[in-house]
Length: 232
Image (cartoon, rainbow, N blue to C red; front, side, top):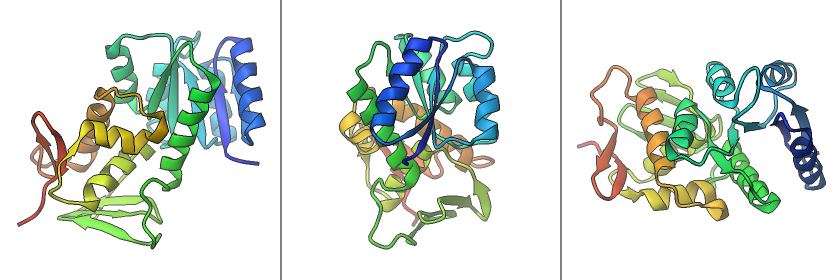
């Protein structure tokens, strides 16, 4: 059996369709009808990925993400009928890794699931040596242990944040456009929404640049993209 996926949606038909499709593709699927039930289920049987509807009774998707992200880095994909960019950005800012806009095709959903799981498993851009450590300045990233530290202080990143930081650390000083970073993150599931990268970069900065000058590590190259500042 493959990865365990928790599907959270208040529509039983939607839950059933997603569960059947993902099960057919080798995943173990758990389901919950609302955010409150999902929090209890996720605590009892920690999933590898969460597919989470935004608009639900009791605890909605945004509130679930806010609460769950306090203690867990398990990847979250939001399933949202809200198409406004500010709603998507809000979900990403709370710590979601990706979002899929309703209505969606099952093949698209599967592509997103696979892309996010690859990030979580460290397969994205993995080097020949799985124990390779990337470092620049005070920032140290280890692919094998999926750990990050800044000046000896441990930093907890989501899979998407970890993947972005690894890409930048591979080539300090090199500028990566938003399109390139998003394509590296999503692969064939690339959807071209540049703000996804901006929000993830902002979250990484908040975590690794705590108590330091903004832009000390990750530098914005206006009109182009981002780079990890090269020392010296």
